[in-house]
Image 1 (cartoon, rainbow, N blue to C red):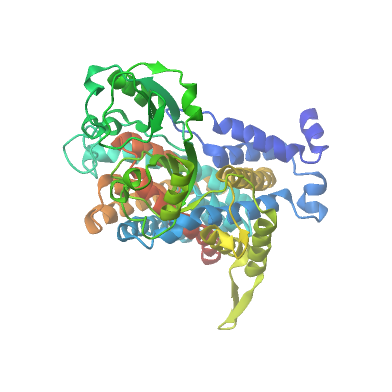
Image 2: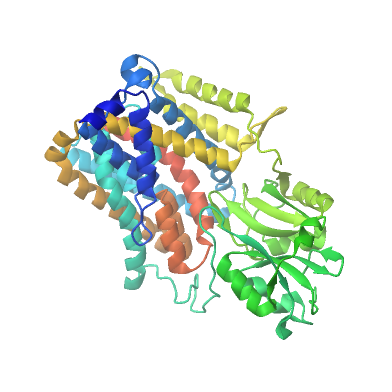
Amino acid sequence: MRIVEAINALPLAGLLSVVALGYALSRLSVRGISLGPAGATLFVALCLGHLGVQVTGATGPSAGAVSLGALGFALFIYSVGFDAAPHFMASFRERRGFGFVGVAVAVNVLAFAGALAAARAFDLGGSAAAGLLAGALTSTPTYAAAAEVAPDPTALSVAFALTYPFGLVGIVLLVQVLPRLGAAPFAVGGSLDGPEPKPARDAPLGRSPELSRSFEVHEEDAIGRPLRELALPARTGCVLSRVRRGTRVWIPDGETVLEAGDVVTAVGRLAPLRRFEKRVGPEIVEPGLARSGLVARRVEVHRDEATRRTLEQLGLIHRFHCVVTRIERGAQWLEPDAAVVLAHGDVLEVVGRPDAVREAAGFLGRLEPTLQETDLAVWAGGLVAGLLLGAVKLPVFGVEIGLGTAGGLLVAGLLLGWRQRLGPFRTFVPREARQLVRDFGILLFIGETGLEAGAGMGATLGSAGAVIFAAGAAVNAVAVLGALALARRLLGLRPVDAWGSIAGGLTSSAALQTVRRACDSNEVAISYAAAYAVASVLATGAGPLLVVLAR
C-alpha cells in the first residue's frame, strides 16, 4: 500500500500516527465508556502493524539506538511513582486508609492468582499471562513493566488488547448490576450508608470544570439570615468565597448575614451555580472583585496537624479569614464540604488576603510555587538514579535478584514525589506537566510495542484468542467479587468506600465515574485515591513476576 510505504519512509511518522489516531479514538465513548488512551492506542497500533506500518528510521530498535518506546516506558513508570507517592505514603498513616489499601491488595492478589492459574491450566505462557492480567485490571503499569522481561512481546500485546475491553466494561456492569441485586447497594437518592437521602451534588470528575461567578443578593429568603442557617454549600453544591458590601470585601463565615444589594462570589459547576442563583439573586458581571486584594493560591497539605481532620475542625475561616474553594486529591476534585477529611498530599485552593493565605499555608503545609517550572536537573537526575538502582543485582541463594528497570524507576519516582525537596533543590513538578509526560510516555511505548506485535498477532489470535478473552473476563469478575466480599463482610466498609477502593485497585477511572454517578457522592474519590496509589505500585511489580512464574 502506498500510504503504508510513505509512512514507513519517514522516521517517527508511523509511531506518532499511532499516538494521534489512538488518542483521537479514545475520545469516542458509548454511554460514557471509552477505550481510554492506552486501550485505543494499542488497538490502533495492532491494526496498523498488521497492515505493515513499522517503527522505522533512527528511532527504531533495529537501528541500535534507544527507542522512543523505551524512553516513553521510563518516563511513564517514573511518573507513576511520582504521582502515587503522596497518597501511597498517606494510606499507611490513616486508620481508615488501611481498609482501602486492603481492598486494593485483594483486587491485585486475586487477579494475579487467577491469571497464574489460567496460564498453567491452558499453557498460555508468561507473556500472555501478564497481558491477560494487565487487561483484566486495565493496568498500563502492569503491561509496561511486563514488557521489560516478556520473551514474547506479541503475545503480551495481543493478550492485553483482548482482555482490556472486558476489564474496562466488566467493572462498570458489575457496579450497575450488583447493587440492584442487593450486593453493597447504594441507597436511593445517593445516601452513603443509610436510608436518608443526601442532597444531590454535581461533583467534578477528573479535571475540575468549576467556574467562579458573582451574584447580587435579591431573594428574600437569603436576606437577613446567617450563612450557617442558609446552608448554601449543602443545598446548592457551591462554595461562597467572598462578599462585597459597598467598598468592603471580605471572606464570609457561618455568622455572616447577607443584606440586599450585597455582591457574593460563588465557586461551583454550572448546574449548582444556577441553583445558587435561584436562592440568592441574579448573576452579574463584577470586575471589581478581581481588584479586591484577595488571592487564590494552591496549598499542599503535609503537616500532621492538618491531616485526618475535617475542614470544620480546622476552622480556616475563623483562624485565618480564608476559604477553601477546591480540593484536589490525586486526579480527582472534591467539594470542600465542612465534613471533608483532609489527607496528606491533598492540594487546596485557598482564597484570602495574601498574608492570611501564607499563614494558612504554613498551618496546612506549604504553598505551591507560583512559577510553574520544573527543575529538569533534579527531575532527570531522578531518572538516572532509578536506572542505576534498577541495574543493581544482589546474589540471593546463588541467584542474582534486582528491582529491574521498572522497579528502580518506580522507587526513584516514589522517593522524589514524596520528599518534594532534596536539600536546596525542589522536586516540584506541576500537575499538568506530570500528566503530559506520563500520558505521552505510555502512548509512545504502547504504540511502538503494538506496531511490532501487530505483524504477528494473527497466529496468537488463532491459537488462544478465545481462551485468553474468557480467562480475562473470569479474572476480572473473581477479583471484583472477592474484593467486594472482603470489603463488606470482613472490613465493614460502606458501599461507597468498598466500590471506590475496588475501582482504585483496578486503576480504572471509568469505574470511578460509574461509582460516583451511582452513589451521587464525591466521597468515592477518597477511597479511590488511597487504593489507586497502592495498586499502581503493586501492579508494576505484578507483571514481571507473573512472566517469571508462568513460564
